Image (cartoon, rainbow, N blue to C red):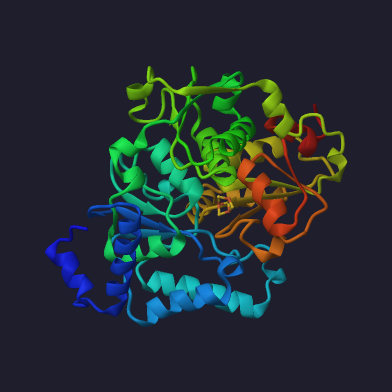
Length: 403
Ligand code: F3S
């Protein structure tokens, strides 16, 4: 691999052992993937920071870097952790866990990371078309490539952390324009709903992930999808498959280059979507909790739930409502006075964490309903939590008892 003089100096240990190791690892991974050089990145985003997921081994890894004086050299953010650092549900966290988790966050902040604690880093710093990133949260990677037209592979957490230190990644995979060609064309019979309804976008992503696996789908679409629909789609497609880039017609930068490109075709129809969505499930009475916010909820998603519940404020009993979001959105909610209103309606807004990366939610409810395909995929697998993927139109029925 060709290396610049500065990169060689780092490999010679001029900046210290921790940077030498970081760069050496990136070079080795790059060589395996056929990279001929390294490139600068504009933003690193690191997953794998919940003590619940990484345990003592992950803690020691971060502690080692911290004690060796590692500092970020580019704009760097990190994922949700295992608990809300300030409040909600915290009583259920044991003190050793809480201490370890707080320490992880403290070390990352001292290393120069932004106080992000979110899987929606694009809301903190929206990527620019064509810029290179090293991101390791699959849902965020999907958004970066698909919505913003930035270039990132789906990195492992430790590698993205190394990239945050040296500000570089290897030039291979989705960093190379020629490697970003779609592999399959997808037609949808639910185009209009895909564009506006996160649960339908989730179901489509869930199916495409299963079918296309690590390919690059080109989705034919007549309607421009909402931001939240794309967020739900990319998260689900990255959960059931390893999809890091999709072309959505009319939305993804450069999609027009491939409008007439000859590709194998598949179609997803109403029946496929209905089979994933719990359309005809009659056991809604088992639902003990509704979960919104995987990936972390946007302001619009939270306002939607707020307005819905407000309509039937007087209803005595409804499932526990959990909304997970970023600190940035949470602070904004507070600033505009909506946080208080949400609390009054018993809408539990948690920040910093989510039900999938926190021990608090393990097997907590008889059944959770969610409109997120990613949560529908992971809650049963990681939290032994029975979960259904709920059509968004059913939310009002469950929260307000109305059709
Ligand atoms: Fe984010 Fe947790 Fe879902 S980290 S993408 S809300 S699994």
